[in-house]
Length: 231
Image 1 (spheres, rainbow, N blue to C red):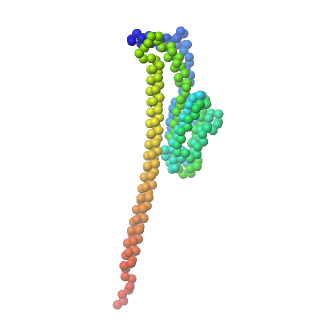
Image 2 (cartoon, rainbow, N blue to C red; image 1 turned 180 degrees about the horizontal axis):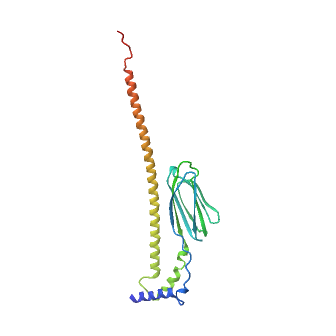
């Protein structure tokens, strides 16, 4: 078993150095775009746009939620780098959209609150990318380092396990982010409802006090003797 792992180590070293040393390694390509999430406050009567670069022939998932503000709704639009309007939604509280395959360039995401003249909106959105360029060199090094003798654990098995673990961890992070957004939205809604309940409770209490005083005054006036006694 130790001899097999030593052979595997030598093959990895030969793969990195190659016949011409480190200078013969291919130059790394541009790094893949990172997943991003952002929460911002959109004032009443305003429109905000964001630009996000994406590689070609990949996958991009855009998700947004309105987590604060009256009505919890907003207008959303998404344009491709070539200027084509891909998505256009009106008065939505949330949405999930997947673009596949993507076009190389900057995508334009716009959030519009111009229909509201009073209420500002708290908006959360997230962008998730899945680029095929990440695994383009995976098969090459796996074929080179695979030893001729049988190993207890193959390189392909290790690679598959790592990729599965990575995907599950990324999905867990995304789910936790969405749960935090839902929690913030529910908390804002509860606080808004609590303020309304307190206000109308105070109004009802004031009306009850006024009615009580009016009833006492009316009853007292019924039993008053308005006749004048002359002596």
